[in-house]
Image 1 (spheres, helix red, strand yellow):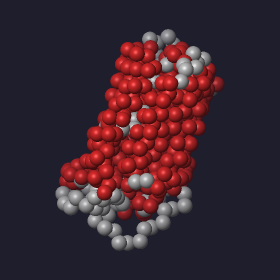
Image 2 (cartoon, one colour):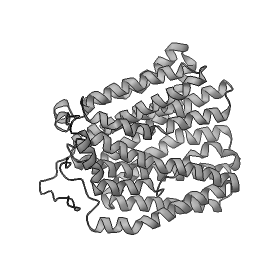
Image 3 (cartoon, rainbow, N blue to C red):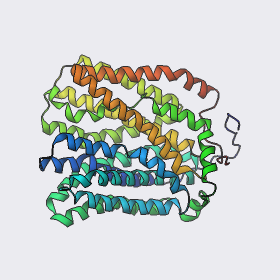
Image 4 (tube, one colour):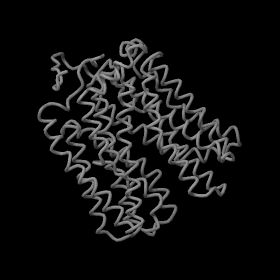
Amino acid sequence: MPDRPLPDTAPEEAPPPLVWLMGLVNMSFGLASAVFIVTLPQLLAEAHVPEPAIANLTAVGLVSGVVALFLAPVLDVGLSRRTYTIALAGLTAAMAFVTLGALSRLDLLGPLVLALSVSSTLFGSALAGWLGASLPKSADKTLSAWFNIGNGSGFGVGALLHYQLLGLLPGLWGRLAVAGLILLPLVLLPALPGPTAERQAFRESFGRLAGDLGALLRQKLVLRLLMLFALPCASFALTNLFGGIGGAYHASPVLVDGANGFGVVVISVLGSLIARPLLDLVPPALLYLLTGSIGACCTLALLALPHTPATYVLAVVVENLFQSAAFVIQYALQFRSIARGSPLAVTQFALMGAAANLPLAYMQSLDGRGFGQHGVAGAYLVDAGISLAACAAIAPLVWRWWRRGHLGEAAATLPCG
């Protein structure tokens, strides 16, 4: 198989006018994530469940990408991705309903949280596979920005409303309201590619699945992106620590909640909208390394500022702004690598998503150790230092790949075994 992408002499097809609206369907994923990351911990804390047990439940939800990776190939065969997307949205809403009704059963919450997280992750992968393989490649950059906006805004809305709905509405009705809110973005489905276009980008054959998987894992473009995403070049995992280190900045609980709630939603949208035009000016892989390097330098610059509430807000803004931009660039690289009509679009997106989640997991652990030993300075030095080292290590390779045209779009079709 040739290493260089085959040239495409056909004129580029114009993107559909409602690509931004299509990306907002991903709000369902963000709304579901808020259930086990924000709402469930709040409810368990009110019930005086020990903090280590709550943290363990959240960690269970965050490993869903690995579990979903093994299930994702099933979504590329059998039914259409459109059908899988709708069915998984319904399953996710149902799991949210059941999970929130099992607060008194700690022995069941772990499996329920995992099921909720896996179903929502598979929903996001099915949606991405549907769009990535059905839309013209000219839509990738805009889709990546609004796909991330959908995730971030959905999470923020869920963090703000789920708890309120459960408090205002009694028992069953509160849980039904949360489930309904998760399903609400599906009203945008008519804007997505119709069944005919989606069917053309879909292969219904379990018999060819193994051969297609082998072909996918032999693609050098896919392997290069997996290597890039697995390194902590632009993870900005510090964002996951800010909820617990407000005291180091003398920030009040109200300020901490506001900065990490509504404030993060606004910054995430802003970061996504800033990254979108930059993708037209700088090759995505190089922009990804620039984002990680400049962001890490800004992290180090925060060390010179006093530990005041204002500095805390600034730190939350800086880290979330760069992380949001990095997520958009990741999505752009992922969508760009999915060939139009790819038979394994869902699997490919899930595979790269799992790789991108790896740095978030291990860097959160390393940042936490740095904070435990040397406070805020330790966490910032660990996060920025490792990120800069990772960017420096892979930059020569990325530069060479880009110069030789090895980070371009996927070929028109995926070679199959």
